[in-house]
Structures are given as C-alpha cells and as structure tokens.
View 1: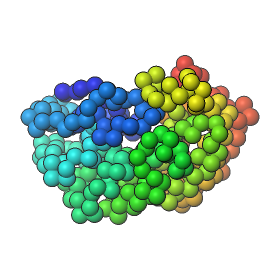
View 2: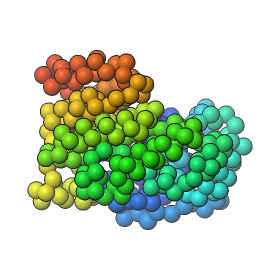
View 3: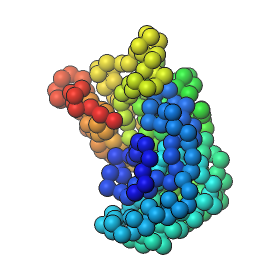
View 4: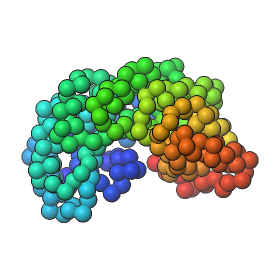
Length: 289
C-alpha cells in the first residue's frame, strides 16, 4: 500500500483494509488534533489509488471491510468517490462494508441524493467527531461548526440510511466548563440519534495549540476524578432507546462498553465504583491514542 504520513482509523476498523485515497484533513484547524499538522490536504491520483485496490485484491482477501482514509475523505466530490467505491466493489467483491470519516461541514456540503448515491455504491457508515455539544467549547477548539449543525448533519446521514458513529471527547472543555460540556454533549448526542457513541479522553499532544495553551496556563486538563465525573454526567444525559456506547478506547481510564438505554444503570454503577476506587483505573503508562 502507498501510505503517506500518519494513518488514523477508528478502533472498530482495526481489521479493515485501510485505503488511503486522500492525505491529511480538509479542515485541519482543531486545536486538540496533531494528526495532520504541517500536512497540506490533497486527494491522491487515480493511478496510486488503483494500485492500492489491486494490492488489496491480491493480498487482503480475508478482510471483509474497507476503511477510507485520511481524516475527511467525504470532502472528495461525490462522482469521484462513487467511482472509487465502484472500483472497490468490482475488484474486491468479498468486501461487505465501506466506511470513512466525515466532518459535519463535509456532510452538509452533500445533498440527500449524493448521500444516497454513495450508499448505493457501497458506503455503509460514517464516523463523525462531535467532540462537544457545548457551543462555546466547539468555538474554542476551532471545530468549525455549531452543535445545531452537527445535529443537522447527523440527520442527513440517518435519512440516507447510513450507519452513524459519533465520537465525543472527555476533558476537551477544561476544568471550568467540564460539567456543562458533559451535559450538553449528552443532549446533542441524543438529538443526533447515532447508531454508536464512542467516548475518548483528551490526551494533550505537543504539536497542538491546545498543548501550548496548557503550558501557558490558559487551559487546564481535568484530573481522573473529574474525567470520570464527566463520563457519568455524559451517560446520564444520553436519552436514547438503542445506541451502542463505548468508552473502551486506550485513552480512557475506565474501559466501558454497553448498550443504552438497556445497560445504563449498570454503566453508571461501574463509573460510580470507579470514582470510589472500586475499579482499577488504567495507568498513565498504558493510555494511548
């Protein structure tokens, strides 16, 4: 495969064929993300993409899923994406799922017909980073959209019959707005009505503006107890009958996985036990992005 730079994918795509059709992120302004700093976003040429599809056709016959990289492949024009998806289905007929990252701005640029077209060509799910439902926090981290726009984009994805996975970020609001961030994130995530919610915990990276803010005393990362409290508040404020909830990413102190609302009481009980010291929390040395 012709990979360039950092290859980022969701934990649930660990066993997927990673097909990098773009390099970097079209937005690349989020203050907490260091994945694509100093990388200019571009779409790869068709020859390179076709070479990688041919490689997968020869060496990846046991993998049933394809994840499209990099950070926001959905920004690519629909006609081009459709041709790439068609090539995947033609050359990798055993593949049963195509997924990608899509930020809210890129979703909102598509029409309903375009999203339906991408589904027809094989797109199955979109991973979208909400991070926070608290508008002042979204503005501070330069997310580029409001909570209301996140909800609208989520509705477009659902209406096209696509699976929606939403990521939220514990700690991103710092200490001062920790509680309202958790409450508003639970509320907005509920209004988005995703199929899956994944909670990660902020880890400050040296090449990011947010890290520099922390060094200069302009941002203070909540401690483990505050982060667990955020997690508890988040779960309390998620009002959905059926959604997969996961906080088992390596960045989290307390791995949790379950289905809301079915497992809500048990999840809250586990978090409460963690707050009281009844559960062994993941050590700093074992946390990772």
